[in-house]
Image 1 (cartoon, helix red, strand yellow):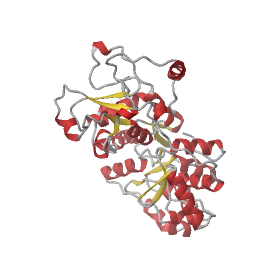
Image 2 (image 1 turned 180 degrees about the vertical axis):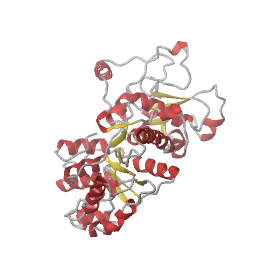
Image 3 (image 1 turned 90 degrees about the vertical axis):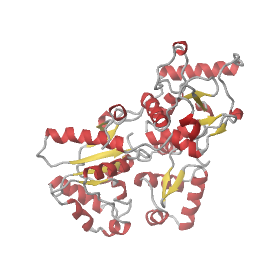
Image 4 (image 1 turned 120 degrees about the horizontal axis):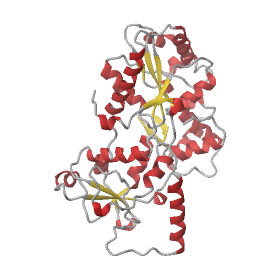
Length: 408
């Protein structure tokens, strides 16, 4: 499994009690507020040569290039760091049985990381039971975890239950067997919303849990640079369109002395707070903010073959210019329940939604279309999920309405 010390520092697993959601710093908030007020009462003077752009000056970056500047993260890295955490915990008590929860937030890639870990260690992956097995309380699924010889991995506990009168029996029995020592050693991946729900409805002791630290603004800066430099050898500068400020201050090369006093944008600080430090959500919003000049062709070839001393500038929209999905107005109670159900299971198929929700098939279809058109949900491999860009506002809304939410 790949071991890269600098990159691994981004992925650090901690107890749930140590998890901290990034906040917009007070200095950034005050600075942004004063700057916004000042800009409203005067027209900023643009100095000759200032690197500023308006939205009309710029174009979206082609998807094929954007995927190389902001590729999906390599799950080998968090899996490697998680293995290190496991080795430390198991090394302290090598002869004791263990079952560990690894908690992940929506769009954090937790299940994928655990899948990579299991394959690297050659531990059996325990797939989730089918809906029919869950509702019929088929205990054959549990027998896969009773073998004492090899540790097992359940990558997505949120797929092992349904919010239904018969939908919790298997998970309840699993934890009861773990607590009585009837199960072998194992690791259970669990979405943060599923964890909150199971704590509420399953009256059994849950195993110890770890969670990957949130990505604050410093981690996001380093991560975005690592993603962009993973394929291309030439430096890329990310600058904000309205002021020309550098958006990522921690460049891979030292900043030239004449740029030592260059202002840096508050964009990443705001992005970390808005995304709640969830890497997948931050990456989605970052991609939406990137632009290029129309008279400069940004391609894989220019980024990889242009001499390394010639820098490419990618432009970043100001935070207040970045569009976010909005809730339908008014939002119906049925839509609220629908969104909550998707989060409790980290995605559901339309057929299962019809099984667990007390709504007609026609109503479910209408809700799907409305929420999809609003950008709040998306479909992938037959599962409907709250979208990365829609998650912050959906979570905020459900929390404000008194729905059970995760603690992160």
